[in-house]
Amino acid sequence: MSISGKIILLLFIFLLLNFISIFTFNYDEYFKDKSGSNINFENKSSFNLFNKTEYKPSDFTITKIDNSIELSGTFENQKVAQDVIQALGINKEGTLTYQNNVVVDKGVLETIFLLIVPFKDFFTDNSKISVINNEILLSGELKNKMYKNLIDTIILQKSKNIILKTEISIPEDNPINNQQNENSNEEVIKNETLKLPEIQLLINNILKDRKISFERKSSIPTEQSQNTIKEIAKILNENPNFKVEVAGHTDSRGEAALNKQISQDRANSVKNILVNSGVNETRIKAIGYGEEFPIAKDDENGLSEINRRVEFIIGE
Image (tube, rainbow, N blue to C red; front, side, top):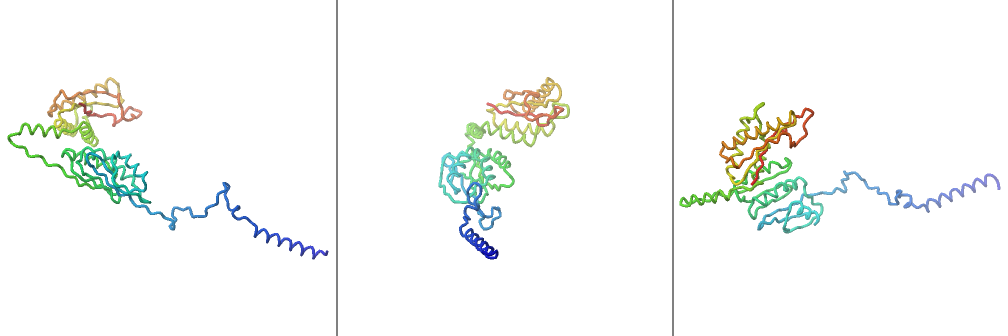
């Protein structure tokens, strides 16, 4: 065979092999990753406009019925509903429906968590916490008008991003027959006496923004702090069945014995103002703890504004 014939034969064989390879190649095997799974060519970007999932807020209502707390509303699934029930201490299920792509807002749930305990304790039956389009409405009647300040204080602790509206009615004072003044007044005082945790919360919230301060190198409270102590005395006088411990604390600067004496002098000074404001002295215990119970770490010089404090601890 001539050289040209051999070249033509080899070219024919080459073309034949390419033709066979193209039509017998296994593309499925080729387009597999190392784990053996098919490679996904979908756009993984979060900005995929063609497959965007739209979520809408979960609407639900918490109702107080016969001293029980009932939850009704729409959730994504039963598990989400049960998680909400458990988180908020709900003890009764109302009408629950389920719908895909419905989401409970975290901030809304955190705000309701703040409200749920006073809602249980302070409101009458048929009061409600309603959530519509992530806006909260707290509605109902308080058992006692003295709870209003507590509710207002708790509401102030919510996130600024959460919309919370209130429709709260306050019970009117019952008219007292002049012929039954003494007995009726005693009953009114008894009914309006707050519980220990409520008194503690009231006082703590007062001190949160108005810490008890003293004149420089003195055990005498500043004029502003004296007014704060008198305000606390008013709460104690309205709730005479409870005792109070006035606890003085310092930072760790200086000698421990001297710090204890300073804290005792300041606690005694606060006690005297309470007594002069009408609180029975037998109800008050003043103790100076010095630097024994810090609530923050002092700096390298032993200084801490937070540790220098006076606390009011309510007891029975």
